[in-house]
Image (cartoon, rainbow, N blue to C red):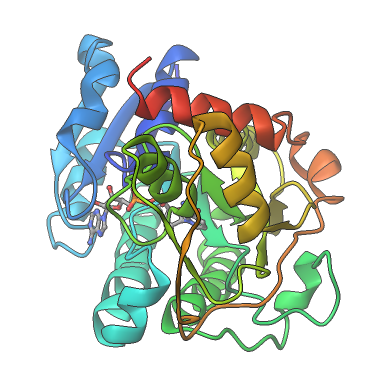
Length: 314
Ligand SMILES: NC(=O)c1ccc[n+]([C@@H]2O[C@H](COP(=O)([O-])OP(=O)(O)OC[C@H]3O[C@@H](n4cnc5c(N)ncnc54)[C@H](O)[C@@H]3O)[C@@H](O)[C@H]2O)c1
C-alpha cells in the first residue's frame, strides 16, 4: 500500500481523485483549507475509515512540513490552488501567494521526507497563452505568454518542478488540464461553464453567454481527468502532459447540447467578453498515450448527460 497526499483534496477534482486512490488500495492524506472545497465532498472518502485522513490546512502553512513528516507520502498530488482566471485578474498577489508560494512549500515538504514524485495540476487552458496553432502541443509552453496572472503562476510552477527534479531529486509530472467538467463542479463558481449553464437550465433560468459564444475550449470529463492523475504515478517523468480531448467546442455548441439534455427551450442572455480569456483552445493529446498510458474515453454528450443527472439529483 502506498501513502499518497492530495492537496486540494476537498475540491472538485481532488476529492474524486482521493476516492479513486482509496478504491485502488492506497492510504490517502488529504489537505485543503476549504476556501473553495467542501467537507461534503469528503463523504465517500471518509467511508474508507483509517485509510483516509483529512487536514484543514493552508498549503502555505509552516505546519505543512511536520504534517508531511508524520505521514511520509510517497507521491504528492498537488491540486490546491487559487483556481480561477477572473480572481487572479482581480488579485494577482493572492494568486501568486497560493499558486507559487504554496507550491514551493509543498515541494520543500515533499523533498524533506524523500517523496518520490509530485503530480501537478497545471492548466492547459492558460499556460500556453493564445496558441498560434491548434491543437496546441506541450512544447508551446516554452516562450508562451499567458494572458492572466493565473496562467503565469501555473506556468512558473512548471519551471519550479523542473528545477526541483534536476537539483533536489524529486520527480514530477505536470498535467496540462483542459476545461474539466462533471459531477461535483461548483455551479456557483466562476470557472465551470458546464455546471453553471446546466444548473440554470434545470431551474428554468436563461444562462448568459459572454462574448459571441464562438470562443472554444477543450472540455474533458472528470473521470478521464482523475484517471490521468492516477496514470501519472508511474509515467510521464519530468514532463508536461496535456489532458484534454483534442476537440474544440464552442460555448454556443455547449449551450445547444445542454438545452437538448435538460429540455430547456429559452434563448440565452448575452454579456461582454471577459478580459484574460482566450478565443480558441484545443489541446494536442498525442503525447499522453506513450507518456502516461492515457487517452480520454468519455464523449462530450455522455459526460454532459451524466453532469445534468447529477445536478438533478438523479
Ligand atoms: N477544473 C478545471 O477545469 C481545471 C483546469 C485546469 C487546471 N485545474 C487545476 O486543478 C486543480 C483543482 O481544481 P478544481 O477544479 O478541483 O478546483 P477547486 O477549487 O474545486 O479545487 C481547489 C482546491 O484547493 C483548495 N485550496 C485553495 N487554496 C488553498 C490553500 N491555500 N491551501 C489549501 N487548499 C487550498 C480549495 O479549497 C479547493 O478545495 C487546481 O490546481 C486548478 O488550478 C483545474
